[in-house]
Image (cartoon, rainbow, N blue to C red; front, side, top):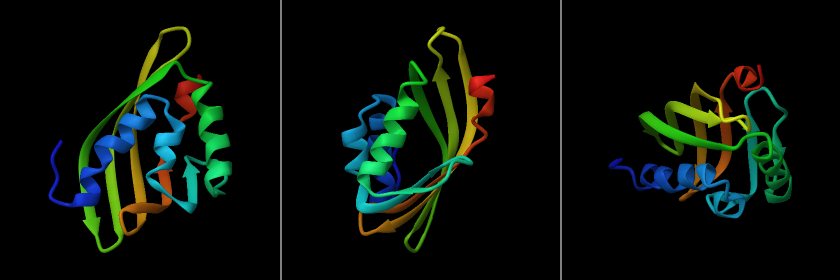
Length: 123
């Protein structure tokens, strides 16, 4: 993937950290007081709360792979849409569409909102 926006260019690394289940690297893309919301779950703030939520989610999947289809940027807001393929612990897979909205503080994400219907993953 290659985008003209230098922050958008960082999306490859961000999603690679998620797919590697590397929470600490993932947190490196976020401000210390970032707010994170995954689907319909309650938003959490700060690295400690985000770490707990992300690590908890990672225990429910064997792995994931993200593919971006579109990236839009305006001011300090970046939006991306794509598909994520999840591998369950029983080795079955499911692919779901998602849209992420990032509010940026310089090169870091201050608000990270994931719009996804995650229910089919657990069906």
